[in-house]
Length: 243
Image 1 (cartoon, rainbow, N blue to C red):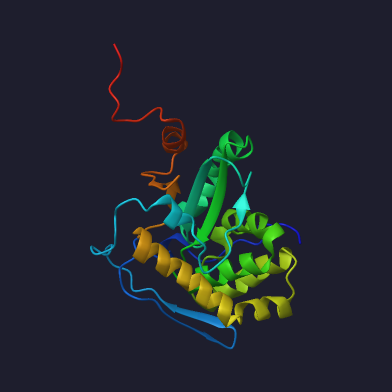
Image 2 (image 1 turned 180 degrees about the horizontal axis):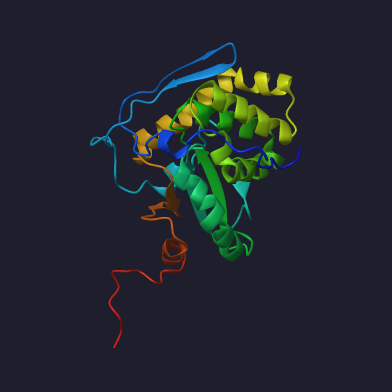
């Protein structure tokens, strides 16, 4: 299955003005799958004041969840980076195109860290995109993820137009119309993705995307300097200069 490519035709939608807000409220998601079409009610709002804000225990963060964790890098690497992200979140896409390559080169490719992506969809189209990533198979999980983030502005638009554009990207990645429809009609997969999001919010206090934990510690910020500080213990802004 090939990595999806950005369509050549220009988009006629102003995608940025229609992005779903990043902050997720404490309301329960209302979601159904009808004839293979994902419908999703994201109520938005301020972060839930009752959600836990303490860093989770590492054992709790790493316990088996509703979906299998797909590990990128050495499965025995001492540093574990866990990300919660939404496929339609522009900040998540920016992380993948601007920051993640640096994190991967410096820490994942060198065997210092392993990376785990977990779904935290903010809207129905994000759920559909997450389902397609899962349906692409474990060996294509990260290439498909990368491709969708790289082409996000071409398909992350509201309404049925977004679904049609997502189908175009999926076909470029090797999906047929039949495989596309079958994937999005998988109610069990849908439920598990929603459950991953619910668990992250209720148990780990995740209320925005992207959110990161480095060896169980919540990362504040998404720049490469933040990862360096968390992993190497250097460059902390609150550390006074020596001398």
